[in-house]
Image 1 (cartoon, rainbow, N blue to C red):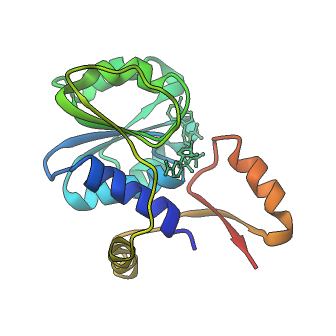
Image 2 (spheres, rainbow, N blue to C red):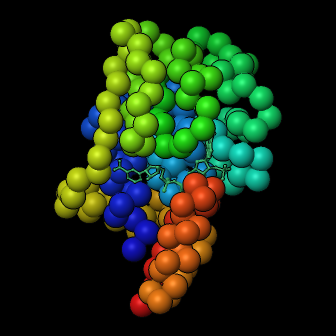
Image 3 (cartoon, helix red, strand yellow):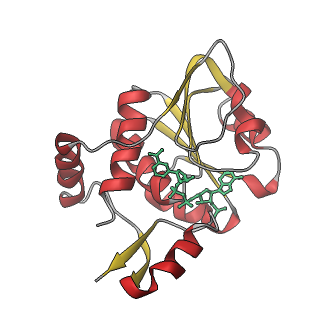
Length: 188
Ligand SMILES: NC(=O)c1ccc[n+]([C@@H]2O[C@H](COP(=O)([O-])OP(=O)(O)OC[C@H]3O[C@@H](n4cnc5c(N)ncnc54)[C@H](OP(=O)(O)O)[C@@H]3O)[C@@H](O)[C@H]2O)c1
């Protein structure tokens, strides 16, 4: 139950829109959230270097999922932190969070790089990078691939909390905080 929405969103953002390749560097803003948690692992599986960005309590969590480097957005300017990790910049930014992190770091995207966003914000545009907003679509072939990756243990779906259907309103309230870790799942 935790795979389809987050998995397909990450998959289509990284591989269809972003055309992420092994050897490239991707920075994921909001990497400890539902989509970001799967994006770290999919980028890792592809052989990319992964920089995960989230708050203090999620630094070890992102490393455990396979992030090569992590940045704590609450500890200072995200762009300056990127300079220490990737002085030549990053090939792709996957934007899955609100807040200032994108504004602080979007000029660390290499010329010709890809900025892929799933939030309905309107990020500052640069003429020398490719920008695409992704809205997830059903795709049985990709879902089967995600299922194989999950069955083989390559892809973990960190379920942080489950709620009974009667408590769905409380689940939605927690999700609206924009600080939940991993996936929230409703059970019958
Ligand atoms: N377009 C689509 O098809 C699609 C599909 C699914 C979701 N979405 C949207 O995508 C967004 C992400 O969804 P989600 O379920 O993955 O989110 P989520 O579970 O709410 O996670 C958001 C993550 O962002 C981090 N974060 C908060 N402020 C940040 C900042 N200033 N800089 C960097 N990271 C920050 C949080 O980490 P901390 O807790 O450590 O602060 C949290 O891990 C939501 O807006 C959702 O509505 C769009």
